Image 1 (cartoon, rainbow, N blue to C red):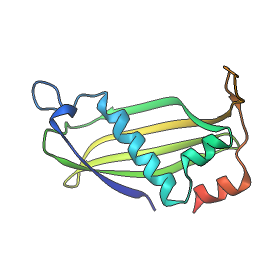
Image 2 (tube, rainbow, N blue to C red):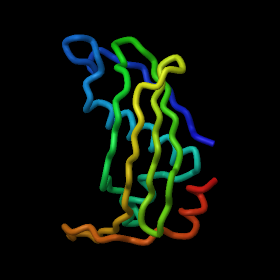
Image 3 (cartoon, helix red, strand yellow):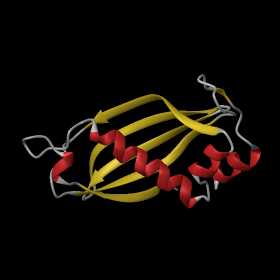
Length: 134
């Protein structure tokens, strides 16, 4: 079952015509993923303190209809796939039941040590994978 969050569209989210600027959708999706993780008890800051980071490796967004200033959109988020070191999220954005956009975002888990500039793939723990599946 997908998680749902509501996002209110502010003037800062729009172009001169009052339509949501296409790049703003990436921020909306980030909020939806963060909310999804937190509802499962996964705190990104805790993972970062353990040296585990999520990095976006691919994004595929399809725009069907525009959102506009003062709209409140609903974002449905669920996991499409989990591997030992990646998660693919599927997002569906709606306004009053009308599809606005669909997106797939793939994240990789990487680790880093202090003073290390290169992130290397890092296997997720079984506990993390189980929390993602709940």
